Image 1: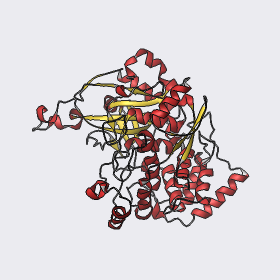
Image 2: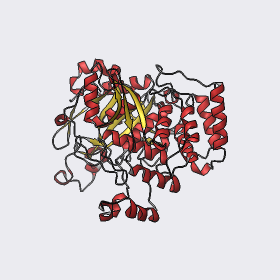
Image 3: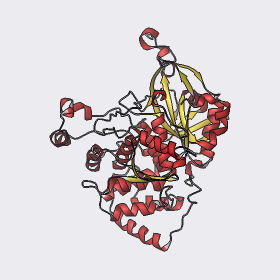
Image 4: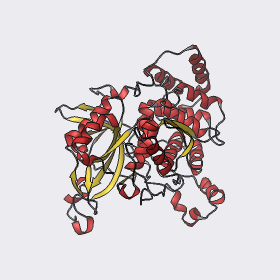
Amino acid sequence: MVQNYPISQIYPITTGVSYKRPDNFGVANPTKNYSRTNIYNYNALPEYNSVVTTLSPQDTEKYIYLVNFIKDIPISLNSNNTKAAKQLEILLRNGKLLNRSPHDSSTTLDNLYNIAVKPRVYGLNAQNLISNALDILNNPKFVTQNFGNIPDYEKQRILSNIDPSGQIAANPNSIDIFNSGVCPAASSEVNMADKYPSEFVRWLEGLSGENKSVILNCSTDSISENNPLGALSIVNLFKTEKKSFNFNKMQLIAKPDDNAYVRACIQNNDWDFGERNVADVLIQSAIMQLGTQNTYNSLTDTRAGEFSASDKGLIELEKTYVESLIKNKNITSLIYQNIDDNKNIISYNCPFETIEKHIKDTIDSGDDVIVGIVLTNQMSGICSEPDYNPLVHGGPNEIINGHEITIVDYKLNENNETVFVCIDTDDDNPDFVEYKAKELLPRIHHGGYPSKIVETDLKNYPGLLQY
């Protein structure tokens, strides 16, 4: 975040409503012969830690305790049929287990151990939570935004005990979420699990613990560089709860809405493959709360707040705010597309080669890139259908939907073309998906990057910042 955000100028595109990828866009189940190694580079924050794979005596005690604690977890609880102890061993070997949080220097191991030994929210099982964490840390591509079904007996409990206003009773179908709007939050979760594993488990430990919250120890520069009062203004604008503040650092509190725990308990007892697990529910709900000024409702997947006219998803400003808090790093959001009042793409704010450079430079730095992509009539293929009518369906460049995905790597294909390796939390496919750069770049509406990586291009292409 580099400056304050006048509400009247906030960009209107919402990414978070379910997005259907055109059948000819991207290749699922790609080969794993990546030409690069960044996708396995968990040292995303060299200023906080280096890759460590050797246990200290104190770590060894925690490790042994965890091995015994998780030895009876059934394979059926995870998504890849691997014993929990084996997953833990893999995390030790690849450096994720001893990765340190950018907020309090705790390790992934520390936070997994805390889940095991400290009380959890009533209705949540510590073994399930650790299984969820191990599953996602080993396979961030398993993060999903699919809410899953609610059993009938749980619906009756919700209507009887959790709906005092009668709003859900008036529309019981409102809690059956088939197309969720949490893709920005799910993409942020992917990034946490992939490149900030200790922070991912720290969130899970705090949100599932007795305080139902996690404290973010953020520098003011991560929110507004060299502007502490501007940082405070932004935090107040988002109505984020503060524990403390000074001109260098602030302690902020992230927590889900109360209804997230209803969803979490349902998934604790009735999780099916392909649905969000408990970790997904809690972390995504807390991110949505941070981004929507504490207005998100996990039961109905709706939000309010002053920043967006939509009741779904997050706009890029909101996503960038949360991303800056999670990483404790100044993130700048760049707007690549110019869109008219009728939601038509009319131009771009920089060449596609510059967008490609932003993405590659960020990946080379050891991080992922979360981007908002759009779907137009032309991209969807509807313009080629015999019954296409611009007066009915809109023009070829009219945006009909938006979605958030995470770019985790890039490579060259056999034709020497750049291909981006991505994780999409809404494609019902728990694998990486590859997009040729020439297909993906025109569809990117916005992307979030470490400010130092893009600061030079902001001078050359001032239209990239639209605030």
